[in-house]
Length: 93
Image (cartoon, rainbow, N blue to C red; front, side, top):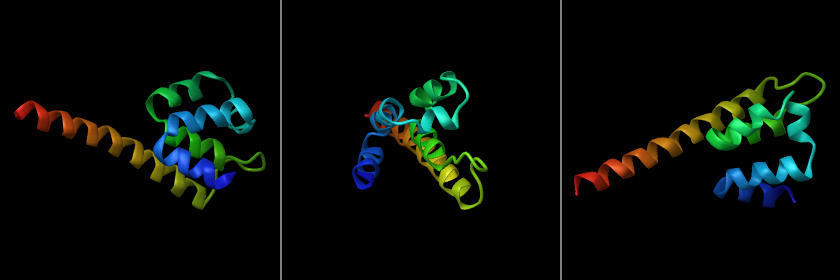
């Protein structure tokens, strides 16, 4: 099941976050309200998903887990940058 989640998150992070939110309790444990995960679902889905999965009740997100959260953030920003580059290339043609 974990491999399926990773593959889904890689290609469809919003869908994977929605499934984790609906069928699990990771999102509820990591975030105090529903507003921040909803904003994450819209703007930074991979970052929100990785943070929710990395968060633990003992100490939150610690150590190497922050690397994965930052890496997901960079991938989210790269996806926006790639889309903007694609649009600017099409507008020149």
